[in-house]
Amino acid sequence: MQLAFDGRVLRHSARTGVEHYAESIYGQLQRHFELLKPISTQHYLQQVWEHTILPLKGRKSDLLFCPANIAPLYLPANTRLVLTLHDVAFKRFPQSFSPMFRIYYSLLVPKNIDRADRIITISEASKKEIIRFYPEAEEKLTVIPLGIHEKYRVLPKIQKRKQILYVGSINERKNVTGVIEAFERLPEAQHYTLVIVGNFFGNFSLSEKSEKVLERAAANKNIVFKKGLDDEALIREYNEASCFVFPSFYEGFGLPPLEAMACGTPVITSNVSSMPEVCGDAAIYCDPYNVDDIAEKIRIVLQNRLLQAQMREKGLTRAAGFSWEKSAKAHLNLFEKVLES
Image (tube, rainbow, N blue to C red; front, side, top):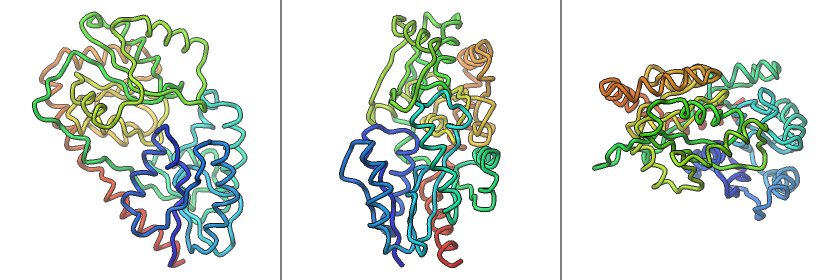
């Protein structure tokens, strides 16, 4: 039995949730798979490789696993295909993506759904969204939650700072502008620093309003932008923050809140999409469309030490329920079923 792993996104220099998932799940599954990945680091050439070289290299495999939303347009009939479709953000929030990205995904995803033997997605919320746009996918979908690395942990001898933390891509659906505007309305803002950890990627586009909010934030001495942090630095930021704020409009899963919980930091997140499913009773929920509500929930957490302690304990327990080992076992079980069918 030969299994092939599509490692296209493992060549990406920038890391979003998709790359993080592919890297993490491959780390667990590598002894079972032959890794196939392009030589080029240029995204356009990587896409060409996906539809030309990958099918040729994978033609002798019994199963090809594509972990990053898309798969080759053509595969030999005897090669089983399992695809992970993380979400359909390109359908729900098309304005957040470049026109070329939207066109590419709109053409490719339905063809991949039709060809796939099974489709993995990462939450029940994401499953519902996929079925909404692609009802033909329903019978093929299996939900397998993501995991948390053990490196996300409470560090010894770390003191909390007067910092509010956001971690995520700078794009419309993540609602980083809602975090900024909420911070600006906080009476406590003059005594706290808002730390925004993220990157800007070419696939994402911002509205004129969001651009202005970000420009205003860049001029605010109490708002700090940090890009390209390594794992050690990011874990330290999670540990030092007084609270973590993640009022995203839409998430397939949403790892940063769980990472913050694993580091002992209270989490404020959205009451929509996958966030209640992922965070359970360990987070404080806000309406991401209401900046005043985001600000009020931050204020409530910052002013209540007892609540912070309770959220810390609940968060540590919640995060401990997610592991890449558990996720990998569910993947392997699915691959075995596909090969047996």
